[in-house]
Image: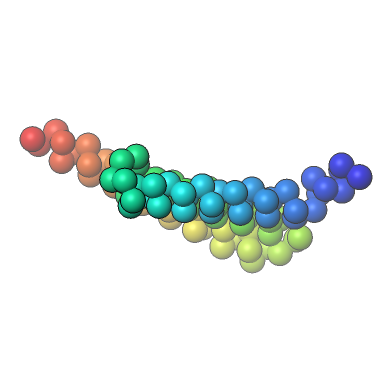
Length: 95
């Protein structure tokens, strides 16, 4: 029974839902209090993780288009995150 649960999409769906709630809670906390991480600090990283989970879900079903799109989107989000971090670091070095 446990093996069936791991092989189904239920676990991945739960992790996706938890991650979306976590990202939403971080955003809401920052919006209401002005403290914590700004969305620009975690949004692309969180998106990359979500896209990887979508690719995993596609591999479990198997829906190979979902796998490909998830991996491409994760790569783009990861690249965007790295680019933003590099630009911030370069901007700080100039000051």
